[in-house]
Image (cartoon, rainbow, N blue to C red; front, top):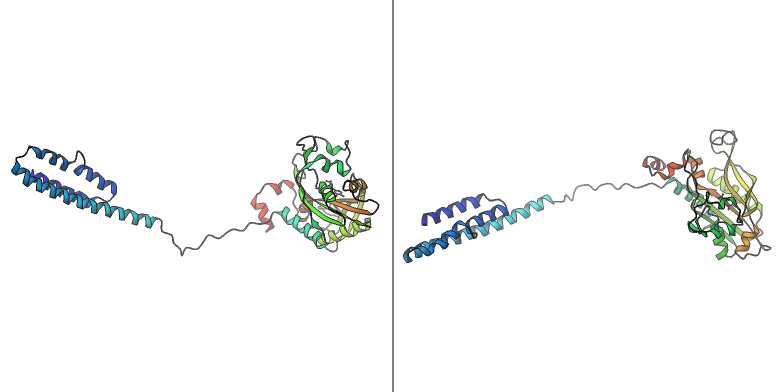
Length: 340
Ligand code: DAH
């Protein structure tokens, strides 16, 4: 039995010397000291020995057990330390490694266009007004003098949310909101999104952007409208730009006009951009209809005003030579990055 004890000790020592992980060490512990372990079984069998044998063998068995336990504990400590070391090595951060360069985005061409147009107007003393994209039918149509039979009110042109609420088809309702909360002098522009039931194609999109303008004060005339918009056109398209005003109809202005600018590509000779005419239509405008001023409780004997509205996509397409409106909404970075 003593030989057996010595053999167990030697074997345990040899195996523990080779063990490299906690699991391997634990396996050896169970094999020797576990409930059914080799040493445990020997200790159990000691009851059968004579008192003399019990004493000597018992002493040896205790010594062997103590020795194995000591080596086991040391081994457990060692594998634990080794595992920690390996983890530290694996998680090591090289603080000298150069950082990843941050890529800086670019402004969307529509944002660039809105900012450019807004800057021109702000330099002329306009401030920015805002209105919601979900509007009342009243602000979008009735208050703008577009009566119940106006064709734009049709379901096929307008996204209705309820009978009284819609997605605004134009930025013009911001005129109404401004007139209702501000007293003249008023001088605002309002860029924003608009929505119409259009099937997307190269020149149509159910969502697009407009910039509205409104000026109301004492003694505002058509001359102010023409002077302001001519100055705007020269600042946006170049100082040689000429403007021309053609009669038109809008329910909320009287008289109404459309403004054309001389083609900034060919200077008026006629080219692909201006379709040979030398002129490009750029915006709608007119003198604010008294019915619109009245909605804001403004004295129409004392005050007059002018308004304007233009499509941002149209201006951007002309300025940057973009031939399909859908390119603005596809978020294709190959397109967007060209505006760096
Ligand atoms: N709201 C008009 C449209 O969507 C554009 C417009 C024309 C706005 C003339 C105006 C204006 O303020 O005076 O077609």
